[in-house]
Image (cartoon, rainbow, N blue to C red; front, top):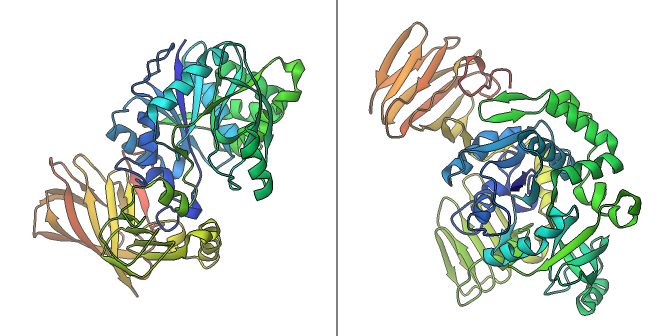
Length: 484
């Protein structure tokens, strides 16, 4: 039997706008440290020395919108053999875990699933390993294990778990109930009483146990996920679950679908238990939480990027592209990106989703995408735009190859800045190096490739009546994006 890591990499992280956006959410960002949150989650078990070996093939469930950057980030930290299950739409965590459990049972007889959200911070990795080891025997024996964070303050932004007595000879506690986010007075009582822990959203159980439980509590969810997996298609490095079957799946969280019902379902014969632990955990749900877990200077300021502070205290300032200077601020959040700037107080960070809602209502591009957009072949940065023109800086990584495509409404001029480009334009091919250029007329098939060993960088100038990204007709694509 193996310990099978499962990473749930859904969600949009709207309270961390403008860095986190719909198509580039917080788990893909390096909010704390140099690794992104997804990468930190993936590497968290590398030194685990418990009773079960850790499976090398990680299972990651993510939205198909950011499948390529998810795969690229995992490869960057050494995980080339991973099963990436693509959800055509979000259905919350219970269907995501069901897909992962079905994938795990197809790969091996049974496994203990360690289910981890991709967007959490755990500062004490060794403490997390000890907590896993403490609950491992319970999971192997058929229990559903969840991990509770020992509270250090009366937090009203987290759900709680009511724990019972410790199991014989073990620090593991019995599961009594899940509790909704409390009012302050109730949270203070929980802290004083010692019988409540924060709900971390981390779980551990055998794949077969989860499938039995979800089949008991929500058979429609299990059947929809089975159909979605049975009709799934392998697409490059991805398992693309069947869209129509998965869209018919009920949406629910692991907590609501199973864990909250477990203590009363005695006939099911599955025990629930809790491993309390304190390992510097945070779900980094909003900018005030980023400030809490970040390194700070002598005035309590947490700074990222090119930042200058004068007479400021207890602030978080993030600069992504330019100098940010702050004077005389206290308890303030400033987040700068090339196309949007956020300024708020720490007490208001939970309400940033209101701004995101207004952006979506007004069809602002900043709600979904950054100015820099990642593609499987590299990325592009929309440097400037106006009526009938747009300028992009395009970077194609070595071996990268754009699709064979054409546009109905725009022509393009390409100027190579560095590297060597192999260009297909209609029936002709050419190689361009620095300071050389070409013109792609409207309606002409074309392709760009980097066959060199360094990044290919070029400037693209588009001109036409419509410049949207949906004006692309693909004829051939090595990344399987035709029709997607």
